Image (cartoon, rainbow, N blue to C red; front, side):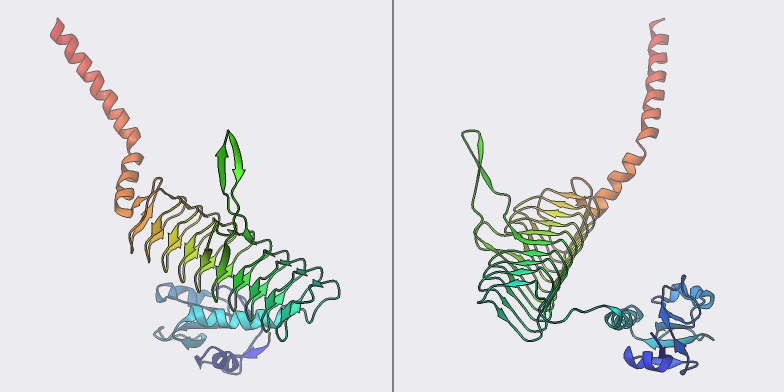
Length: 344
């Protein structure tokens, strides 16, 4: 990377202040930055770091106090820095081109313009892949699956048959979409498999991390709404419906037929029981277990999960249990002494 401060300002729709011809050669965090780097400051309460950083320039909010540093003023420094980082990453990342000769593609597959298929990828019959989608090596795309435009499918992703994926979807390595839901019926003491004949539908602008599993529905569909982001190592069971712009953090598990409404956040290692509804704008804190539905605009945590205020009070009481035990033992001792005196 070699861009002047003014060129970067134009890229992020900001206003440069200081040496506009200063050449920037790298990006970094505000504490780790060195001479030649540009970094960002998202909040005025960390203003002291602006004067301490060794970065040559800093992207700052519009209302930041005056400073001797070279700065670019923008409305949202985090978004501006992310845009700059994306530009650099795109320029530095290897992008495969064309169809690799080792790819196996059925004759009736429909490929859009500029589709990339990497080595040893298999695309089964009647699949459709739209313009500018990139599928890296070692992937599997099942029969009658449809993948939208400008998607990015990293190596070793499995997308089974009859799956529908929207536009600009990113799927990271090792993820499996459309595996059978965990459905069994006990007959004469034996677990008999229940066929899972539904599908998975993933809307536009979804990002799915590494080693995620999204099961197909028993009937109908498992559904991931527009703009939802799913972290690594998440399990989404059959017939789950996830709304728009949700965040599902690592190692969370969602049991079958549960619905997450729009803008729900599940923090790390959350477990959701089946056939529940998690209301819109709700937040489930890390390591919580949710056994019943949650109304909209609610923050819960704990096991079992409780509203935040209740959980905090219970946690405070639990932390004081050793003191309570000591007090109870002291009271028992005094009661025993009084009893002994009264018996004399």
